[in-house]
Image (cartoon, rainbow, N blue to C red; front, side):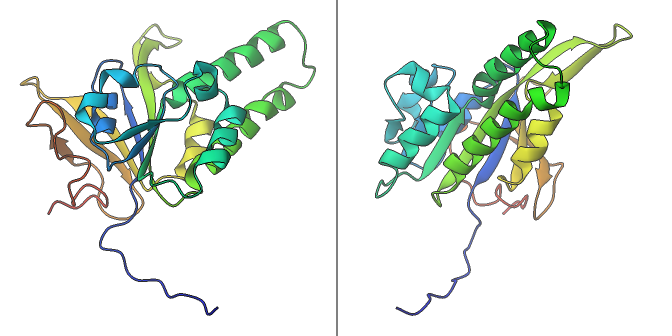
Length: 227
């Protein structure tokens, strides 16, 4: 059988990373992605926005299957071949990676690891397994993670992501657009393009409907263009 040729796509796949504070509308945004959706419901709250979406599949009814990279990979291998999933939503990467980070830190504090660098090997492998398991199916993907506030060494308030810089650097290979939810002075919610593999970054698109109606499916978001 001869090789098939690539046909130029009108728009690239939606391989997006979305960050925002708790309650800022991340899951609501996710519900507006291209259906059918497959929800990896690590935060165990996706049921709150299902009514806004089209058809939604759940990765598993067992909560533990949604937060363990090995179980996530196993469920995807078993059920994705032949499925009509258009978008995989990881909600959220924070809930999957944070327990691994916490466990590693406790082990280091307890003296279980003589080599601190080697202690983080399992976290790196978990992130790699998760990315490879989620992104290998040719559908759209939305990775959700959270923002948090804290204090730096000078007691100044700072905002950071709940996913480490190292993990975010690894995630970059699997996305073509980085998005951050924002709030305008008038109280409107918006989504800011913070990074684009191709196209412009820095623009903010505002949610006029209050529930992201039409936003993720709108043609101009994928490459940072406004159409």
